Image (cartoon, rainbow, N blue to C red; front, side, top):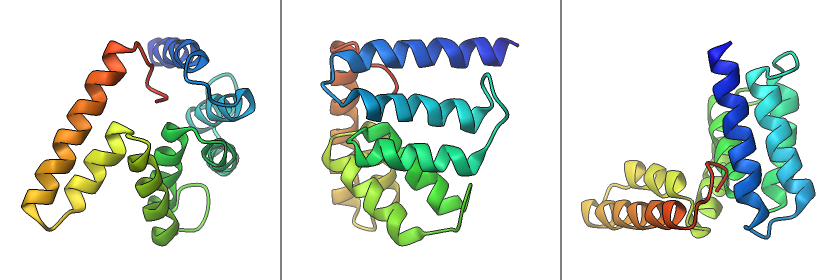
Length: 138
């Protein structure tokens, strides 16, 4: 019960934060639906449906959906494993300065100088997230 309450609270916070992000409402709704479907919040968990919802949200420009979709594609969660597609979504989310995507790129970067730069960019993006009051969806 406590986990469900925390997840629901995060969904509300993400919704409020997205209102200022200028992202399409339909894409944000798909992001939230994907979270509910993946985690079984108010409905049975369904990884395939969540992956489809995240794909729609990612196509609509939601960086968190891009990142989550990439993680699912990399793991083969809710569908076939697709490393190439996952890498494309991570790169796109990183271009949108999504901190978790920048961190992911840093972890995979063989050049230590470039990896350090990516981690600095991730830290900077996290500072903006906090200052601007953005939720976990961005």
